[in-house]
Image (cartoon, rainbow, N blue to C red; front, top):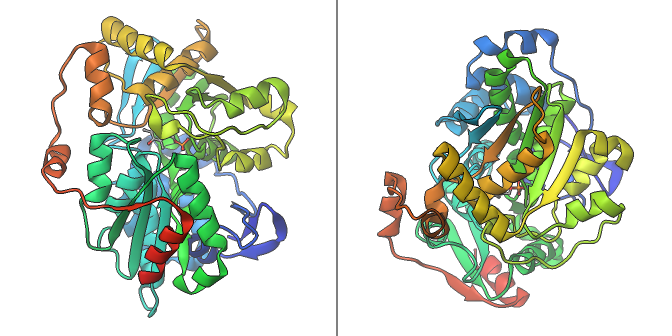
Amino acid sequence: MKYYSLNNKQHEVSFQEAVVNGLAPDKGLYFPKELQPLSNSFFDTIGKLSNEEIAFQVIEQFVGEEIPKEELKKIISETLSFNFPLVQVEENIYSLELYHGPTMAFKDVGARFMSRCLGYFNKDKNQKNIVLVATSGDTGGAVASGFLNVKDVEVIILYPSGKVSDIQEKQLTTLGKNITALEVDGVFDYCQDMVKKAFLDQELQIKNLTSANSINIARWLPQMFYFFFAYKELKKLKNPLVVSCPSGNFGNICAGILAKKLGLPIQHFVATTNANDTVPRFLEDGKYNPKASIATISNAMDVGNPSNFVRIQEMYNNDLTEFKKDFSSYSYSDEETKRCMKKIYKKFKYVAEPHGAVGYLGLKKELNNSTDRVGFFLETAHPIKFHNIVESTLGISLEIPNQIKEIMTKEKSSIKISNYEELKNVILTK
Ligand SMILES: *Cc1c(COP(=O)(O)O)cnc(C)c1O
C-alpha cells in the first residue's frame, strides 16, 4: 500500500516510510492511496472469526508485503492480548470497553501495534529512532508502556504540567530506560505545537524523529479493529448501528469511518466532544475555526484543533452535505457530563468515567428515542484513571486494579521544560 501526504498527493511513500516518518516532510498527514473494501464473505462469516483473524484481514492491505504475514500475525496477537467486552447498558445502548489493556486506555492498541512495527523495521538496521509525542493524558502512558524496551527506539513524551491525572502521570514518568518524560509549563496544544516544530527542524533531521500520536498511521489504522469486534457482537440484532466516539484528536472516530469505507455496516457516527467544540461548531456553520484548548474533566479530549479531522474530510472529499449524512457532532459541558455519570450509575448500575459519559450523551441524543436503531459508545478509559472525579461524583470508592497499584508505588522522574530550545536540547542528547 502506498500513502500520500494530504498536503500533496504527488508525494507517495511506503507503509514503512509513513510509519517511520510519522508526518510527511510538507507537514501533511499520510493517507492510504486506495482502499479495497472487504469481501461479503468476510462479513458473512465474521461471527466465526477470532479477534486476531478479523484484525489480520482488516489490516493486511495496509501493510502489504512490507511485513511478512507470519510476523504481522505475531504483531497482531501481541497487540490484542486483552479483551474488548461490549457491555449492555440499557435496552439499545452498549458500552464498548476499550480499557482492559496494560495502561487501561484504548490507546494501548495503537501504541502496541506501532511499537512492534517500528521494532520490526529496525530489526536489521544500525539506526535509532526517536519517538516524540505530546499527550493530553492517556497517550503518554500507553506509548511509554507499548514502547518500553523496544530495541533502538528512544521515547520522549511531553505533557502539560498539572493537567493530567495522578495515575496518568505515574504511567508516563516511572518507567525509565528508553522512556523520557518532559513536564511542560503550558497546555496540551503548546506541547503539540513544539512536537510539530521539532519534526520540521532541519537540525534534528539526523535524529530520525517519528510521532506516536494518532497522526502516525500505525497508531491510527489498528484502531479500526474494535469497530469490527463490536459489529461481530451486534450483527445478530439486525438493527442499523450508530456509534458515538468521545473525541479529542479524532483518531478513533476517523478509524471508525475508515472501517465503514471498508464496508463495515455502521449507519451513523457521532463525534461527541467536551467544551472543546471546534467540530460541532463546524457542522453548524461550515467554518473550521480552531480555538485554544479548554481544560475539562474529560482532559484526554482537551484538544482545540483535532489533528485527524483533515483525514475525515478527505474521506468525504470535503463535501459537507455528504459528510453530514453519516456524521453528527455534539458538545457537552462538565456539568452535563457529571449529571450523566450519576444517571447511568443510578439507573443502570454502570460506572462510566467522564470520557465514556460524554460518548453516551452524544449517542443518546442521536438515537433520540428511536426504537429501530442500536448504538454503542466507546468507553475509552477505566474509571480508576479518573477516580477523583468518578468517586466524588458518584459517592463510591473504586477498587484499584493491580496494574495501577503497582505503578503508584514507583518514583516519578521528569524533566521540566518551558520552551522549544529546552526540548531541542533534550532531543540532541539522545
Ligand atoms: C485519547 C483519548 C480520547 C480521544 O481520542 P481521539 O482518538 O484523540 O479522539 C478519549 N478518551 C480517552 C480516555 C483518551 O485517552
